[in-house]
Amino acid sequence: MPRRTINPATLAHYEKTSKAAAVSLPETGFVRLSTILKIYPIGRSTWWAGVKSGKYPAGVKIGANTTAWRVEDIRALLAKHQQVEA
Image (cartoon, rainbow, N blue to C red; front, side, top):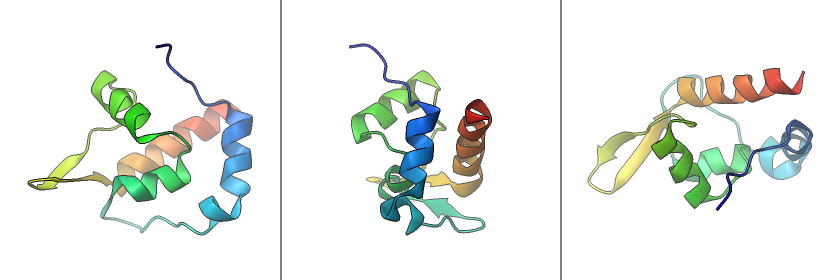
């Protein structure tokens, strides 16, 4: 299956919608995948494939069945995509 890339215009449009606007990242700490996917418009399996390939940041296991991501890593990912947009 070909990899799906996010069009910067699509990302900008999505960020302006109420779903994305309603979500804010904390200054520091960790966020779960459900929060990330409200900000970054891709599917769960696409996210995990990107983590495996190194395209997206690796998570931190905080429990036996729980993974979270550092807010700093997610902010860096969003900033990287905003630079592509400009």
